[in-house]
Amino acid sequence: MVTSPPASRRPSWAGRNYTLLTTAAIITNLGGHGALIAAAFAVLDAGGDGGDVGLVAAARTLPLVLFLLIGGAVADRLPRHHVMVAANTLNCVSQAAFAAVVLAGDPQLWQMMLLTALGGTGQAFFGPASEGMLLSSVTGEQAGRAFALYRMAMQGAGLGGAALGGLMVAVIGPGWVLAVDAAAFAAAGALRAFLDVGHIPRRAPGGGLLADLRDGWREVVGRPWLWSIVAQFSVVVAVVGAAESVFGPLVAEDELGGAGPWGLALGAFGAGTVGGALLMMRWKPRRLLFAGTLCVFPLAAPSAALAVPLPVAGLAVVMFVSGVAIEVFGVSWMTAMHQEIPEEKLSRVSAYDWFGSVAMVPLATALAGPAEQAFGRSASLWGCAALVVVVTAAVLLVPDVRNLTRRTQAVVAAEGPGAGAAPVDAVASEKPSA
Image (cartoon, rainbow, N blue to C red):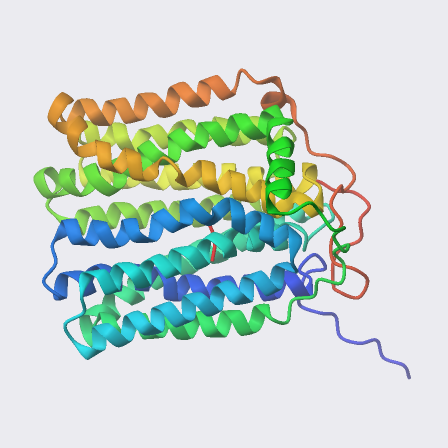
């Protein structure tokens, strides 16, 4: 008797590249979120203060902003998995050196800033390459589900990594947690080295990086839905980041009982992102960006809740809902990018998207303190909430945002025959990460 081979437990849309990308992202998010906590405590253990912690954080953000666009152009010019592996190697080396100076005792602030800046440089090249690789690795009508599962895996790993990292910092110290993160980058880079780019057409020789950047810019400004949402999120991410990184801890310290309640609120937000990704594995809104943009309005609620301020339980509920909402937007945004942007320009367009999202964060964070002194904390937080509402309402005036719909046929090619991708016959498709 001839017996049929056992059915694969892996869904048809979860091809080889997708599986490798998701597994590697889980590993780096587990290590990376713990490393963020470890880096802060490494600075404090070395005798630094809150200002020094901010300097180390800024040292990571600055090269990320400076090199993002170049990273996107490079990722569309070279094989994306080579760019990803090279970036992971840089992150591995910089985190290993960071761990070494911490474990050796008496790390200097300039050493920690320099090594953190190298990590930010690696992320600037990794991010656009990773997003372009992910968007090109799925197809079929389940593309949105694939993006939702990927984001859920990342968010879940981030939650677990933050909790485990905090515990490990307390038990074995920040140096060893940084060493674990270096090992995570090494493992993830090894997995990404096995990505298959055979399905991606060879790029024709171009006119250099500047020409590639101009081409990517034309792609962005030629699509009103794209540039309007990138502009929207340059404001949204900046004010939400300032509210949560500057005002949140201050409100928690003065009104809510300290770091514990604030940690609970942030945990509720993380749980909401996982819930939102679960929702998007089943829900396929026809008007992608209209549904996603409506879900940006709840991002004003945490700032408003801190302005009141709400009790801890109420704040946690607000944070959970905003976590769900941002994942609905995120999956919808990835589907729209996957559906509308030509494969050979995905990384450049993703770089402009990332750049728009992070470019104003340092400015907003720096202005938070002066705004509190000039207007008061509550008024500043209400201002953050109002800005989110105003720019989101403005984006809804763009017809393409309201009307862009899920297509019935794929536009972006995915993994080739034998790679495990779903057939391209009825599609639809769907905004960091390691």
